[in-house]
Image (cartoon, rainbow, N blue to C red; front, side):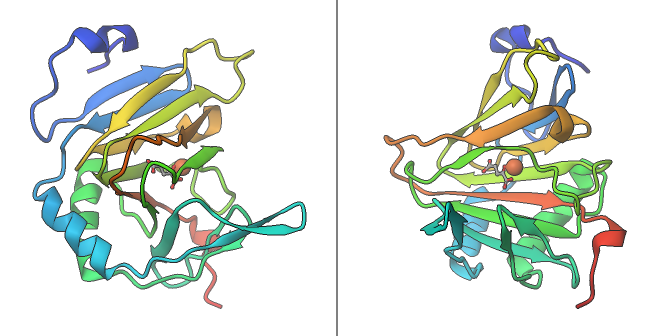
Length: 218
Ligand SMILES: O=C(O)CCC(=O)C(=O)O
Ligand SMILES: [Fe+2]
């Protein structure tokens, strides 16, 4: 079922576990508010078990901590370079595999890698980008699962001159699933802006498919 974006505000929320479609030019999303069962238990398990890292990026010759904690997980060989950071791969852990199985069933796709982000409070953020790195398979969806504090997730067309669709903001809450299907990453950018009033932390898991040709067993 396809909805008009401007009708969404007047629609009742979808039943638990259902995904609503959001479409615009070059954009194909499916959003399930509160989709994950037992979200509290998953949040506690991930918070305590994931080997969170404080990565740094170098801008104009100066090194800065990135404004969130991260962890890269995946099948052996699924390396991924993100904002110039070549992440060490962690092996899949049991708490993550439990969520991965549910997300794969909903997305209809097998994921071989995952970026976990931990926004410690509303000061942590993620700037405008698309998940369009060359090692990612552009024909596969990216599935994003959120736990903890609700945060705004903004999307806008990459080239507003070519794409007149209006920017949109989703509030991604505890247990929400957001599937970003092709060609979303090609035509749209997304961000998680700072929200200084948010004191609680939020975890986000983006499941991805690294192209077979890019898997390197070194
Ligand atoms: O935290 C989010 O909701 C988005 C994360 C994201 O866009 C990414 O990891 O590439
Ligand atoms: Fe992203």
